[in-house]
Image 1 (cartoon, rainbow, N blue to C red):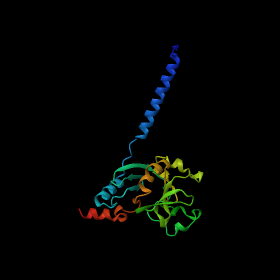
Image 2: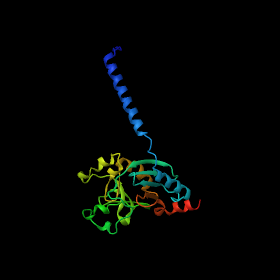
Image 3: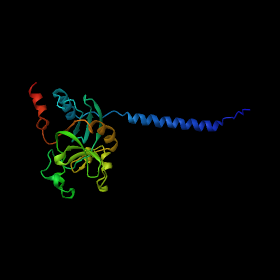
Image 4: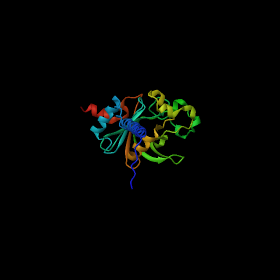
Length: 221
């Protein structure tokens, strides 16, 4: 014999509210996940156009880092934009690595020597002294791209990374600190195995002085 149970209208209303709240949360999450990628800066856009025209990346995935914006953009092998993120960069303004700085312990590196070098680099996967996977930008200068780490609480690296001000994101010794989720989700799939290129835009020199193919293309027009 089957006994019919009456459904409590109060319980039904509670379940309805919980379902509505869950749907609202999911919609907000999905919207945030689908947020548009920030537009390229003018310098980054000009460089990408010239990379495509000259085939400088030679079919390899690449990234463009605008130091003035403290932001990078990632492109696949077909030069299609895959994502963008703010990053932490060297504390000092400058486009060159100070000679000999790679051999110094961090405690002996002056603030003026904490630069992120500009240029075209072939990315090399590797590991740091802690065994973490990293991406070498300039191995000889000990400049790498890695997940952000909060080693010194006084530097507030995680808070700086979240700041909308590019100036707040100048704090490292020259390495490029990337949000953990972006490093794992975007950088590793594109750059860990295949040959890849990093274009780090200058902040004190003309673009053509750092990327000769840009000056040649302009001259040939």
